[in-house]
Length: 355
Image 1 (cartoon, one colour):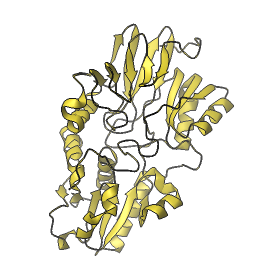
Image 2: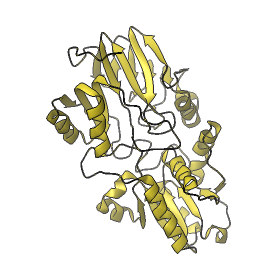
Image 3: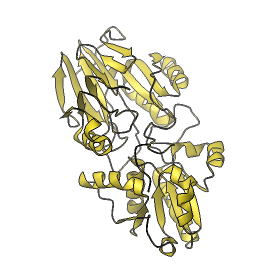
Image 4: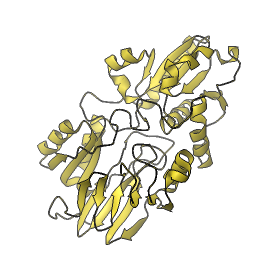
């Protein structure tokens, strides 16, 4: 489809208390409360809420929601694979890869000669566990801005993993414990370790096991994984253990021999955050686009207007306006800009039991 220049913003798209509302289709995108019809971009808890009557999402996202929410994952669930499209109320809805976590999607809306793309959470960095981000030219680009400040420039993730493995080799008597989140970050770190040649068993805190099984069931190979809980304490010396960030700060850590605490997060770029969290091995590995990729994406896809949401909105609005685009902050409520709700960046997932 050729991108036209219709009146902007489109009158058929509005911000309601429940979230972004597509009026002709009578649906919400990532609504923050239960609604009759929802399109869900991915499985993190601040985007995939329980109790919707009808949910449209990728098959992977629906599988993740079912694993996390059970019967609350939606009364009726409809799959739409990446690249497929359907028409609802005269609006053509297509899902394009977002590169955030397994099953994550951008929502592409075509109606009345106008194309709107809702990015959801996304990243441009390579990730062996999910489909890569697809730039989709559009009239209105609605972008996240979690790391929407120039200070946030993420290094290549494989370099961070190489640093982890150097520490592992230097301190063979210590247990390296990396704080990760159950959905996305955990599996990406495992896949990066495997790509770097690490073929030993990787030990998991109990709260991470379920989502790893979901990934494996959906075809993502993770190699040999073992439960850290119940493992012989001495046997964990010299091993790599993945755990929710909260577990690296509580008594669970006491069962591990001489632990070296690490964390994999975009927030590890900020020294004050590293000091405050007591992390010895900070790894700047993020599942969100950094400043350079946020601005590059705007340059590539936005033709008329940019709407910025859940994050550092002002700087990205200023950038877009400097490029001659109309831009505004949506200030949607209900999205945890620092934690990713599900905690793809800072706090643990509340509905996953720690063991």
